[in-house]
Image 1 (cartoon, rainbow, N blue to C red):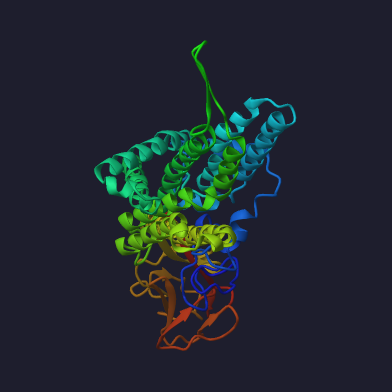
Image 2 (cartoon, rainbow, N blue to C red):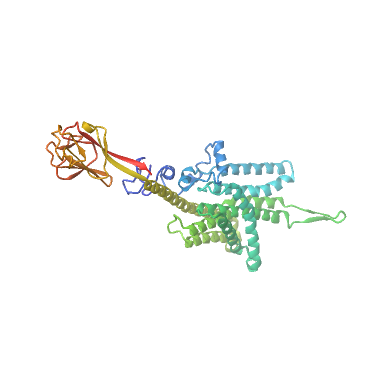
Length: 483
């Protein structure tokens, strides 16, 4: 096991780290912290952590458990959610299914000449690829508090609402519609506004929820925008054959142009609209809640918003800054670089969300432990293990004195025990520790190991002791009682 503060290895049953003194998180949240992330610490995450579950075999029950998340009966409590979270894997299955579907459509269109294959690939494929990426964000939602059907609703309704907001902003500010370079000023605020509407409606308090809702809005926006560009570049604006006799018209479809748009935009979809909107939604919730995120504030939210806007500006504006000759060689590397930057920023925000969840879970465990401690009492006693009172237990609410004088002692030995002094010794408990005081007895007071207790002072003891003879042995007991 590892300390969640200094990351040094400690024994599995440790309550407090011997190196830094940090209280080790109890089982549940601590199991996630100490066993799943012993290398990098709980507050950060790596690509290996995110994708290590992709190629592992998963039972049917694992998928069923995922799909049941988000209900009142299956949403874990704060102290439980860390131990129940599993590394994402379902998104990869959906992505493979989407690729197989696209390949089959491609075969239908180009081997058998059936145009339905093209249309299925363009329109259904444009929905499946963003959905597979969205599933990844749904799986990494550690709190498991948003059901899948809600995310699908946000994907469809939120994606369409963000497009409507973009069109509305373009109507209010028509100058921004003149150049694609200004598109981020319309699209990013629109996606953020819709994300905030759903975040406030669902009362999301975790950064992971903001990431998920933002990704759902971005995925819907990306899917509908991809379909628009496929239709605009591949199906419209081409030559039209008109039959005036039968009053019909035939649009000549540019299949190659539509395919180019489809493959290019879906290849980059994880690091464009989905990543940008996810960053905006997650950062907004972290800044709004400010629970367990340290110094995360609206300034940090503005920083992630600027990153999204900047990446979107550069994505659309490369044609304005780079000569056309160089653009042929640099366009693809630049776009790949922008995607990588966006994904790195998302992972950085995921680390902030992990820190928030860790703090919330730790606080929940700590409060539960404090409540348990407040509802229990510790009773201390001394028990006779030999002699005339063998088996008797005497409470230590006050000082207990042992000897032969009834006027001075609580535990009175018979007169025939003449080797026990009239007032032999006293026992008390203070702050959970046991102390013995020998009243200058003749035969002495001894620890069970034979060491004599020095007379005249209170001596802390943590083992049985006896007076005069090993026959008169006493045990020190502590009992915890729940009230």
